[in-house]
Image (cartoon, rainbow, N blue to C red; front, side, top):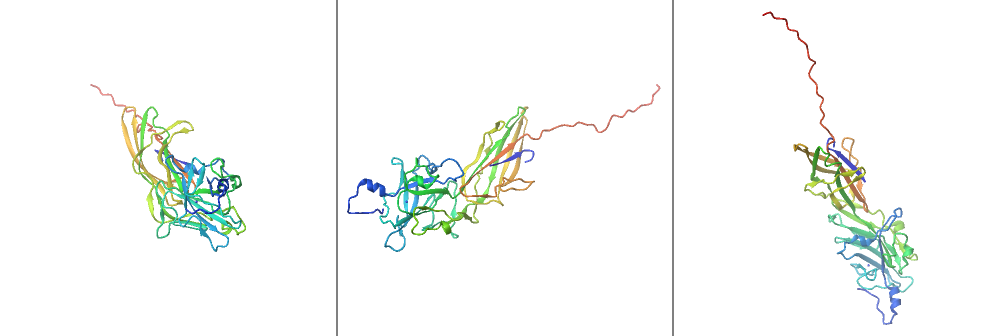
Length: 379
């Protein structure tokens, strides 16, 4: 996180049917379930649950397409149908499950590939065995204020519900059941802007600080294409229960631009309380944005500041401020963020320092006194 200081002086119904009765316990063992978690880099401590992506009044769920390779059948079959399945969290059973029960194939040579995603919008325009695509050149995806797009790593050639412990350290067995490993990544970036004042009063003066006309124009349309090739592609038919990765997951931003900042005046009413401690006034909180290059982007606003003195005299200034999102220059320093990367949140803090310039006086006369002697006058 980089603070920018501004001084006022400077500025997953198809299910397997059988005429043979099956023991309920056997059915339970054969039923497909999912093991869901957010992706957490191995270098970071802690676990982030996918459930935390949902508010209390929302039903936790995601979408999944599955492709089955059946013994004696050419090609792959849409195991969940052409449109896929909605996988929903059952809080009572503590498990993720599709709308109907599905069962694992019986032959040891058969397998299923799973591709999952979560999207507050319409979702990807196409999901195939090894690729997912959001938007096209003719119709790019538009990113809105509260959008959330997530994609899971591919699950190749699965034949059974494995024990969660075999899926690695990124899963928390206490929060999910055994099942298909479904590791999610955020496809968008998120930003937060906040400000605080070094002081709002000092005993001799009080400052009222407002930010008006906030402007941060960025690209809000793009194409997101995920592909699995090379070492991340579908493994040989003899290799089962493999988690994959998507190659170089990144957005291609288009030319559409929108202003993501609010335009109404925001009063900066939080000040530093003690040294090293401060509260913040929120300018923009947890905004989803399209990952993109920021080299030509600036954050602009008007700094409207009124100073009121002890004798009730006040004066006001409105200062135009432009902060480059990238490094900027010595004369106009920036935040130092060259790009917004997916699966990353950025916090920008602006510190406003009123009263940096005191009015000082240096009295002087134009020149020293000169002594003039006047002649005596006799009356």
